[in-house]
Amino acid sequence: MQVERIWEFLRRLNPSTQSCLLAELERLELCGIDMPGSADIRARLRAELRTDGSTEGSASPSSYFFAPLGPLLVDGAPEHDNTGRIARGSLAPIWEWIGRDLLPIMARDYNDQMKALIASNKPRDAQQAAAVFQVKVAKSLEGNLASAEGAERARVKLSAYTASPSVYGDLVKMMSALRGRDTLAKFGAALPEKILKFDDAQVRKITALLDAFRKKDPDAIPFALALVAGRLKTPRELMRLATKAARSRRAADVAATPYAIAVSMVLDQIDDKRITLLIALKKNRVVVACDILAEIDSAESALLGAIRELDASDWGTRLHTIRDSIVELVEAEVNRFPDEVGHILKLRDVRGDRFLADLVWKGRDAISDGAMFCKRLVGQV
Image (cartoon, helix red, strand yellow):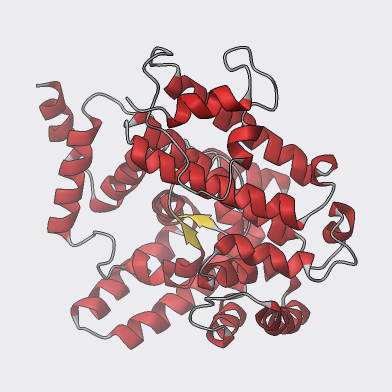
């Protein structure tokens, strides 16, 4: 009954506000926060937006506007600043903010123009109109975010549309990406469609492309690296752009290279998987969690194998923090069962138990050693 009353109110909202609300509910779900009745509300909002033609993938003024950001979008609800990437869930609140607070009159005119072009099936004209509005928004953002007061005003206004801690950072990244829209498009067109093997020859080719790009738009290098990662069969291999250019494998030497930020981006990938692991465990999807742990283990092993003295670096500190969090997640799941029962959670990658061994690096009381931990993880229910 209460859900019905809430829905009676929500269905009266305009599609833009409904879309923003749906994005926020989905973000909370990805964070592992499940409110009573939210699943029903999400389903009804999706159905309502499908009726309105505002669903993801359908042509709309906002989809045309955000089209250049497509290769940079990341799903999920990252709690960290995902270098070179923009959370897909940030788009709806940013669009709402643009239309209500940043450029309300221009946004209204743009929406009216785009609806007419979309209805007339004129995609090329729609793309041109979107490009013009993108420039207007980027210039407005540059002016508004240049001062501390303007930046704080934007933060406060955005908080009315989402509780996401990353939305303001995504707004700043969006401004930079729109500013370098054409340069990034040319760089993306020069990349191979798919990089199945990131060997030394490919590393040299991609490095040459990045060097040329860096001369034109050095501030957009994180986005260029994100485009490269999107083409790699194994995204964690992005760090080879840093390790191959270093004088040695020591962390300090790797950090001194032009594309050292690639290592941070690999850590972002691991942190994203940590959040995915949290959701899988909350939903009792232990087989999925199993695969995620294997991916985390492989990524960590690759990092430790490629970079020496990692523990003494900022990268090592962050990796330890991520591992701490994963330890807590896995222990909480395993400890739901009596010791004699065990758990089906296990790593399927036969190559390695590095991550499993490192899960107990702090010598926790609940698990005495790596062998015991492995036994509890691998045991069958």
